Length: 112
Length: 113
Image 1 (spheres, helix red, strand yellow):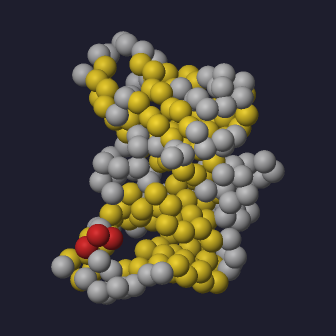
Image 2 (spheres, chains in turn yellow, blue):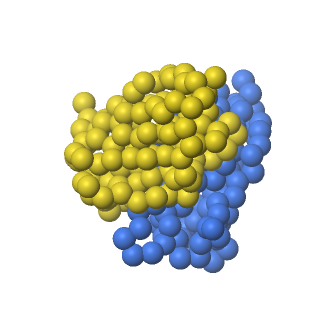
Image 3 (cartoon, chains in turn yellow, purple):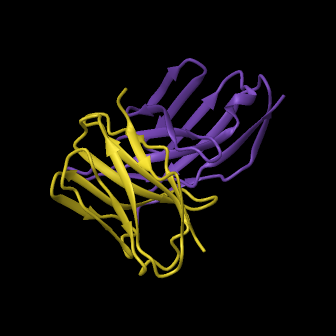
């Protein structure tokens, strides 16, 4: 079955550590996205990529980095520069034409 | 920054009633509008999208769009306890080549048995 796989589902990090969240899709979608969701808040765009080897900052890119070396993969690194990294992170990919996003199951990061 | 506004709720309706969820947006050039449902602790899932002014029906769900008023709504008929979730309104940003969605903060719906 086609879909988006995010791992790990839950992650605990000590302050000052970098962590990388994995996102893999087998939907053959060109565009991929990372969103962050805080309790009671909507989704905020961190980074997006429309093609391999190209990505753009979203609204809250500071303290995050991404890569897009393969069409299927769009990992997100939460660096120690991110001041408040505890959140629910959602990876999504995009269907051209309709504009709708498909989401992975999410990764919940907690900084101790 | 372009914004999408929703009442945070909670909106409580009795089982079998009609739930009405509302959303306003600031980007007048927006062309595509989406409603997502998100259960607690889960990722959003698409319910409906709408592009044209008027109503679009899919089963118990009806999306309504009024571009002149920059307003989009979702009606859920015959509400069921399983409809209890947070509903996110999303708007595709205008601009050539833009595929980004801006999300509202969501309205929490509670359907009382």
